[in-house]
Length: 606
Image 1: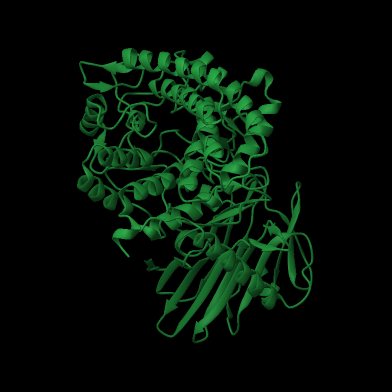
Image 2: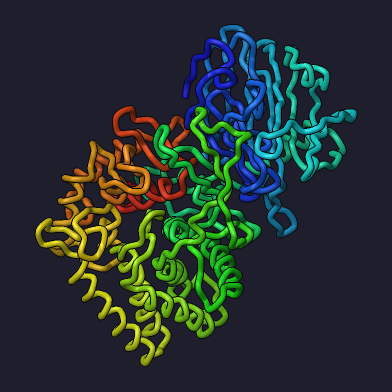
């Protein structure tokens, strides 16, 4: 990626989603195309954004950013170091170049994984004697206040009501505090972390963290079962999904941001820094397909801990990353919002909704534990008994109204997708029961699944449209029905599935993009397309035999990624601009699943 800048870039310009993400499964940061950190929450992924410029904090312009810029920069090049979550930003002009390396330390030592709440920035002169300026402008309490500042010999401490953190550096503290330009004569290191002194040579310590973090990611990627084609896209998507997990509890986040609008000035602004049980299944499934099964094991630990706290076994559709049940939604006046398009919300009221598909989603996420002999499961009997309780909840909710997969706030109806996920849960329970020799349980779940299957065929198929529809007895289309073959509800050769794919292609497709639906919801008719739906369509095309069309469409979708290979939740079909929370785990899952389906086999390549 090359960016040409007349001046301060995003410090004075319009934010966009041409962002990179760094992280370590404890914290993460978003870095814009100028190399400025514009979003980072501490001390964990759902914490207070100490850098909040992405959502325009009120007060003096330029708050909530950590920028390192070179005077007279003509162009900026940005990339990830190969197979890592380490970002490299080059600031260049004819007579000088500097490099900034950004990462969050993650490494294994003494048989333990280390992932401190720490951001590291290493700044190096590459050509000539760059003249640089550092702007370190954190915020606190969601942009409401500026932290108190104290200085030590080699660090700046930022004091908030909640906690204190410090930036340790070998740069001039005077130059940083006064934002004066200075010559970058030798490498400098900036380490933002807990309020603890760092002993020893900072440059050597920073380089050690860099080497160990780079080695970790290279080793992790080396263990992935990637496809022969689309390797770069799959690796970047897999790393991004990993960064959307909170390893301490096993939670899988939908995204790392809050309140990036799904479309301009629509009020479709939501906090996605939580664990949706439905979304998490798709993330776990994608990483499982790549052989990264540890995320599934950690997620199921999260589910188990959540389930034991649930009254009567009933689960909420989403939880906080510690397993919090109450996620009351409030607005934050101290942040104006992305491009000033508020409101900015903390919390998500969808936690109160009924979404009956979540029980099937958990069963699907856990099913691999019974089949994959690499995984150590000490008590299949107990695990199966727990899944049966979830199956019973799926049966209770089957065919009853809920908020559905798109979390409609104004109405509850009988959603086809919800019913199919409930069927899938019962179907997999029957198959698992056969596998582990429980004939009576197998017969019971087979009967339940068969009853559900027949009812869905009778009530969700619209013969006039020649397609499955969004709701029982409904007349509108929904992209989730593209998943019917992948969920094994119908074979892809079934004429009803082919009819559904054709109908959605005519009514919901817009170029290579797809809308979730085209009918009005709580906020009107959607104007931006939902990114993952296009990947669902690619998979469906491939499944029904339209492979070349699927490959052409997939190539166009990959071209929609931002400059470092990431995607948000939504895409404007007219402007091509990315909208919605970022990076969206659903969208990155779409890349992986489509690539695995469309790729040639390794034996056909090597």
